[in-house]
Length: 211
Image (cartoon, rainbow, N blue to C red):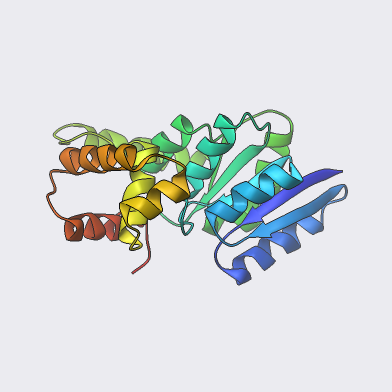
């Protein structure tokens, strides 16, 4: 029996994904999580074969969930769902160890194929997604200023935008306050920003948080 964990902060989305998963023989939903921190805890407890996780999760985003599970040497595969068409997301997903990536709008059509591929040890990215992201990357490559934020830096920017202090971020990400401050300063330097308000606007623009 293959175990699937579903993580999304919207109950209606979790219900829809559960319905698709439970129609398949020998697949069961091992649990549901409404934020990234809960997704990690449930994954460690239930040890699912696959974690389906929304990119824009509260507290800890989907990429950080994947990165944390990899760091803990979990053999669970991660399938990221996103509403957002951004080549940076795919780049960061691959760097975070993600081997499955779908637009939410494609989930009904491609979810089963994606899970089957991951269960077989194969990555799954829809051809339309890859073509679009490669096209966007080629358009934006020349003249693109600045450096990409790392997955950890994005997680810290997300938590800042959600109103967390450096101390509470250190507790959520299990980092020292000094390390959080360093990542925060690095992210602001990369983005050419000097205030928390600018970071919040960046997080909203990049769909790290929902205003």
